Length: 360
Image (tube, rainbow, N blue to C red):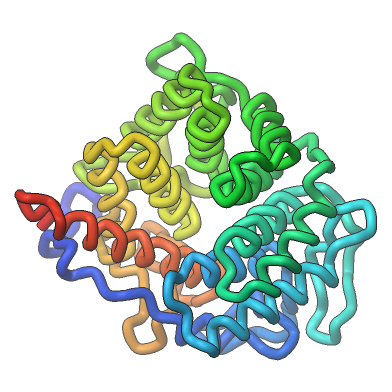
């Protein structure tokens, strides 16, 4: 069925959004860490573990405001995995086999940045004092390092932002956040393509979010304005017939027709993260609309009208193709769902306090 003739799902309302559930995250976890892949909802142990996903797991677990004892223990397990992955110079391994052997060497690629993001979040928001202290120690081991890759620096910068929100006098975190913003660069003057890169690839909202966080936490109004401008432009680019249509695998480039698939849940979650940060920093309700589009993407308000999660397992499907969802339910996608539903809960609470009742 062509996109123009697709059967439209019923409108998604905020009251339709389910609460975040951890069932499938627990299913993918064991006493070592978080297994990366699944065939449908069954863990594929042969693919082992990766720091990328364990870092996401630690981050999302520590965002829970009232975690139960089982989730606290899961966060502790993820933290232990990350501290084991970290080398003395602050770099990180990424891949461990199911036999508990590292299959790569420590580097400063994306997983270094994601590890610092998870560690910074745990140090700032962890449920127990000792978890916050240990995460802070590991963050300190990596905070003086730098990566040549903009997205690695963006992820690390978001971890530094978490540290600064907890302690505004943290100079090392402030330096890392400022350096991340510098590496990312500023928006251009061409209204058709203001993005500082010549293509949109992956984790694009994180780049804008870092500039927003840096502008806010470092007191740079110009940088804050630039980050908000980037995010607004990106949200406009990703809006398609009134719903979110994320930058897919393969990316978008100026002057080239935009393809729509394969869309990844992690991109919808990154959009939700950035819009939630923009809303928190500015207090501007206009960010609620693109945030809600990110939430609604998982519930079927997307390019094929496909619900992107399994209500029985609470897992999230791995990608949106032209024929509907890829039914595998891996760690990255499931954590993207949980993270976005956390934002939905916050948005619902905020909306309920408004005189108008906020979003329906």
